[in-house]
Amino acid sequence: MNRRRFFSSASLGGGVLLVQPQLLANIPNKSPKLSPNPNPLPIAISTWNNIKASKTSGDSLERGEDALTSAIDGVAVEEANLTNRTVGNGGAPDRSGTVTLDACVMDSTGNCGSVMAVENIVHVASLARDVMEKTPHVILAGNGARKFAIQQGYTAVDLLTTQSRELWLEWLRNQEYKPVINAGNHDTIGMLCIDKSGNIAGACTTSGLAYKMEGRVGDSPIIGSGLFVDNEIGAAVATGVGEEVIKTVGSFLIVELIRQGASPQQACQTAIQRIIKNRKKLDFQVGFLAINKQGEIGSYSIQKGFTYALYRNGETKEFNSKSAY
Ligand code: SD4
Image (spheres, rainbow, N blue to C red):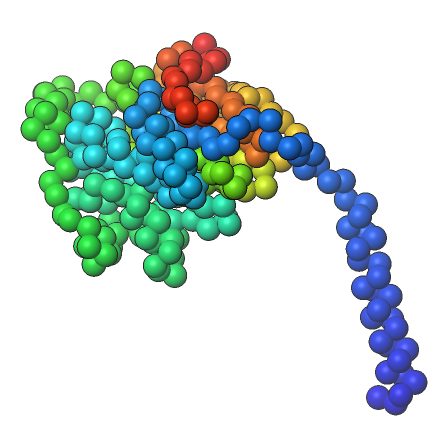
């Protein structure tokens, strides 16, 4: 290429480069304008009446821990709670009598980790963080996740308590499969935290639906369904019948609606409507909980009874969610 031809093609290339930013400038920026945070930080919110868990996350945040560490600290309370039949140790088993746990975490840099159908390990949200930080992968499932946990120093325990076993044996008599999801049952815990620096992260952990089929995995460990975090916008978590949440990618949908200008409340309602419009029979529960970058909270469920536990300003309180029915 001679000198003259080189300069003429270089200037052509330069022309293209100059045009591109102008084109981009014409795309409307729908991100909400973020005003300074009117809600005092830090904030921890969790699904259902998990007061102790939200307080634990709140205390962690007050000590200066980051949002992810604090979210995992909080959900660990319920993972270890033997009376909670839907999370961690003491969770209800599948139809074969085996307890399998699902969990995921997402941090404020958009990084995430997940474990599915894990046996014998109590603190699966922490394990999901280890998958995120110590492996090149996002998801580990089943025996691989269990083996990885043991390599990382987690203790293997029998997660089926005497009481969970008795309830399962009782269930076996009729084998009626009706997932009952309500506040009395505690249910899956999803925790969203905003730390003192304003960064958002979350964790979601569950034993899944009681007496599920062997190998069944719900929404809770699926990034975008059970949990989604975008540190510029907000975060959402889901609880209830996971199959319905997966079909609408509920948590991702909520964060994207917030990005387009919806409040967390409007976004949760739209996500629930999306589920309702496709179903003739609404004999199941789904609840969403969301927070935006300014610390505004939204929650909505199909049926009455969904609650959330909010830590803010040194206090932890339970709030009733609005519902479609
Ligand atoms: C699941 N979403 O495995 C979970 C169950 C749940 O409250 O949330 N229970 O489908």
